[in-house]
Image (cartoon, rainbow, N blue to C red; front, top):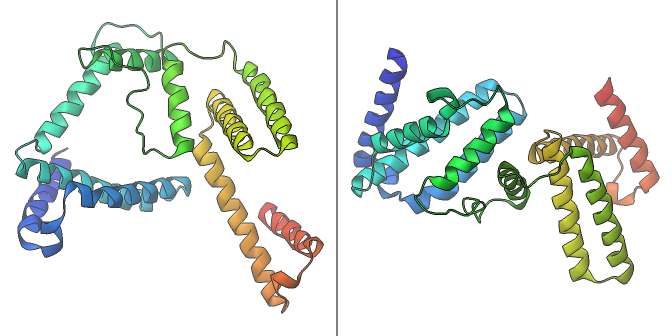
Length: 260
């Protein structure tokens, strides 16, 4: 613990000095850091998906630097400092965990903890807060749809059993097929959205992170296509001149290579 506090204080001291002496750090604002923070968050997410713990450590440091940077700018504006940030999150964690720091009994149920968390969030600002109010508008659509469904589930708006979601998925596929037959692009787009939303719901109900699942498939596709491209070059061929059957043959080789 003593080492942790020492290193954290060292980071704060470094930030104080950078803000005074470094031309780049001096000119940064909350707005200029925003897109960089988003990039760092994605880099952390990528390291987690790769299960590269050394890279996770590095990216956590980069993200922590941003938090300290924002707090430093906040203190310069006399709005808040790092102490205020820490105090606020400490109070929030204690308040939202009455089963740990209070007398609420959740009978060891993680689901009950989630329901209590969402209920307490609605009460925090001293007014009737809407359930979906805290979902960021700028959040990517796939992540947003999952978060929306988690939030409404937290107040009881959910399927009685997870198996029921597949009827909804089938219903959305049928509706999409009807619009495809009519060739109405606007309605097809709407039905694709409904289908994606239903599939994200299914993933949530089966404890699958849809973002991680899709990114896993992205990585798999990239790996296989790179194999296809490399094998094609080694044979002195051009992808543009190959038939789909020829490409499929190498694609199957890539899949076998993965399994072996």
